[in-house]
Length: 495
Image (cartoon, rainbow, N blue to C red; front, side, top):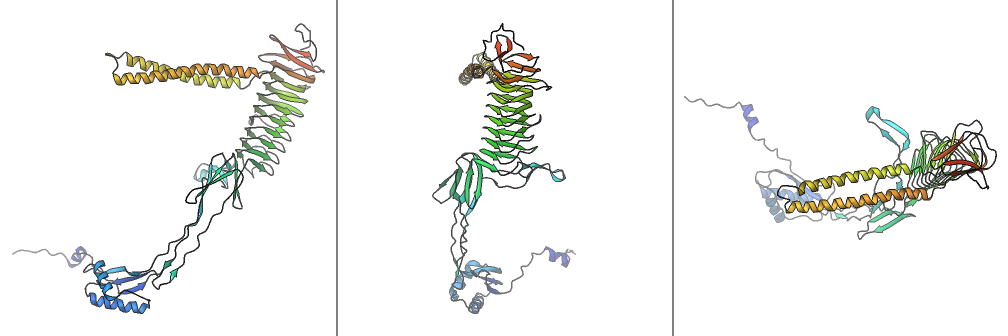
């Protein structure tokens, strides 16, 4: 007797292929009225009946025209497979509308971002209220925005024979303002490029780059720190803790409180400057102010002050002119000389006036020498590699000879660069000394406790002199002498 194992009925049902549930017969128009869709159980099982039913449904839809029986029969045979049901089969369709492409602007970056810069993540996020987001500073040649033109759409046609309208394409309008160059390609795409360094502005569909950035008030937490590639004009003050930077000139119509200031050109302060040791004012050109107090100044040009310079640390490659005021306390070093009405002050702390010294020379020489040392190390390594390859037993092969030739060219080029570098060092020194002027003019008085220095030589004024005086160097001695006299080295002047 043979036993036959039969799976339980419920298990057998689970193992059997799932049967497709036939859809209900439906001939309907799609929501967009562009298609007539068919749902139907196996149309080929009785195709004549199916076609007849479809024709009846078409008539009920009241379409102006629809396929005939022959077309429907052939279409079903092409589309359907025996034993398979169909869903959403397209039996008739009009034309889909082509939507328009709206004109749009592709900005190179978010020039008009708002808010403040943050540090950290999650609960540790800290907001720097001085670092207000400001991306409007641009440079010459920078692509600002690309304007893509609008492309009209094309109407469609529904199954009733009616046109399907499409919306009108939205255009973008950008007018080219000052400081901006506009170019257009064959497709009508417009590219707007900055013609100058400055600050981008987009107002009333006009794109412009302003060389002068005007702040109508104070630089404060409300404005955040300022960075601009052109000229900066501040109608008010620069408040404590701020940072302003401009590649061009900076004009401050108020005063500058302890703040970081960096001007690629000139800095003009209608009021005065009050600084601190923690804040540096760096000026590529000239600096002019009514007064300067307790500030750290680094200037490439002249420093002109109407009233006084008190307890400052000033280094400039130009001259310092305080001919109507005074310099009291601190250190003032000027490559092209110093003119001051009153040097030092009664009861003032030590005052140093130094002329004929380029305060940037040592740093520039050190940087150049470091560069030359790196070049010399590279040249030595090349020569060592050449020696090792040349002394190879049996001599170098053709590939190694070619390598040696290339290394030798590089070593010679470095040797020439080193020679040029030595000349550059001498040029740095010569250039610094050519414009240097060992001159200190004290037009009214000089107080005791003032140190005057010409080049590397200096002397301390031990007694106050209430007369105009000139500081001169006689070989290695620095003397304070009356103006307009012979200024002989043997002359017994107070110093």
